[in-house]
Length: 138
Image 1 (cartoon, rainbow, N blue to C red):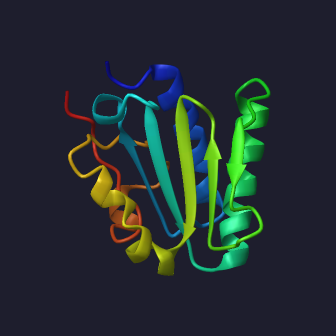
Image 2: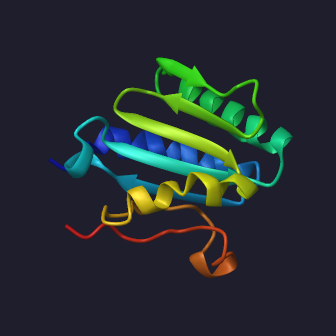
């Protein structure tokens, strides 16, 4: 069963919030098939610890305002500054310091999963090294 459209819509809102506060990279994966735990995993990078928290706060604020008071059921890492995990149940958002990406290597976990087209406003060619935006192939 592919990720639910409502989850994809929420993730697009989260991606736009992260992009607005200059997240260094944003990618979302439909992980429904291999995991069966959640629909989507979104990963956003940030260039420093303050930005990690700013990106997470902006995402959480937008999802609350634009998705009917949606709040994460669990938060982790809010005091660390290296990463923040927001678990919304049907999707999970992980914001991390870009220097930690190699360490976490989360993309490797989802390499066989389809990426979700996040439909950010700026064209892909504007920041090709920073934003992964590809269509989901079904």
